[in-house]
Length: 355
Image 1 (tube, helix red, strand yellow):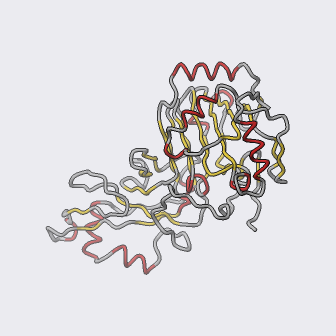
Image 2 (tube, one colour; image 1 turned 135 degrees about the vertical axis):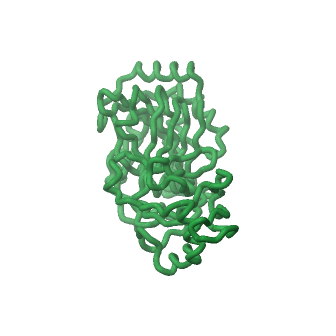
Image 3 (cartoon, helix red, strand yellow; image 1 turned 30 degrees about the vertical axis):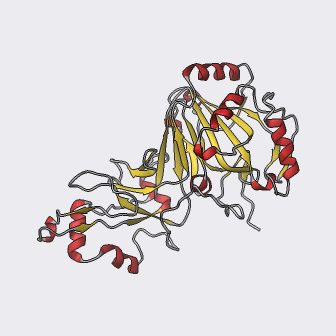
């Protein structure tokens, strides 16, 4: 049996094993990390990646090898990659040591303008009619969900009366999202961030004893950045993002080519830009969340990468509305299937008030 994570409210900070039997057809890891993280590849892989001295000199003339600095050189919240929704890649930031490099970042679905400005105003007005309870790190919250003791893994409906009425339309609109097929939210948490309170949330995993794979968040009132970090001892394989000759993106897993091998002293040689390895702990990915956007984390982004919101990314009042589904243990065929059915029936009545 996997060790129990250390739970903090609805989050767990220590990485644990994935839920038994987890399969996700939309998660597509694009590399196989070596047994141990290292600044440079193991000797056998170095020989494979480098090729001949002539080719490597040509590669280095186009893309000098990144120095892969220690994590201490990056202040907390200083992301060195940015997620691109159009390609699904995390691209190295221009001011970082990883400029010109990228890697596939699976498990993120992001869509803009999920609701209209008028709908946003109406939702926030209805939220503000209820009390906001003080929470951690300068946040305030409203919870619509069952009473849970995550440390003891105990659960009961308690005073839970369902999700709020204004969420019924939001949940209905989710059906149009390809990754949200069959998504049935059993809990909703509204978090209020304000720069005057220094609002933030530290890197964390959401609990996965009770909550299922997909975390769905609606970002209201202002833009922000979701910061992703990884404590794994694995390494990440980076790929060059463009050819110097034509400036085009190279697809993940392929190699960009160029004839500019000037340092080798030979002309007309086609140079292969080899992938490089970097320790996962040295990589932080920024996911930019526009106002009124909807983001879904699943697969690797849910179970391998922690997510956070740093103070510097809260410029104005921001409200995050997060919806969570039940885990397999509380779903059809699970050990607590009947309790899960009871909670879903309450949740989807859409007659709730904050608990």
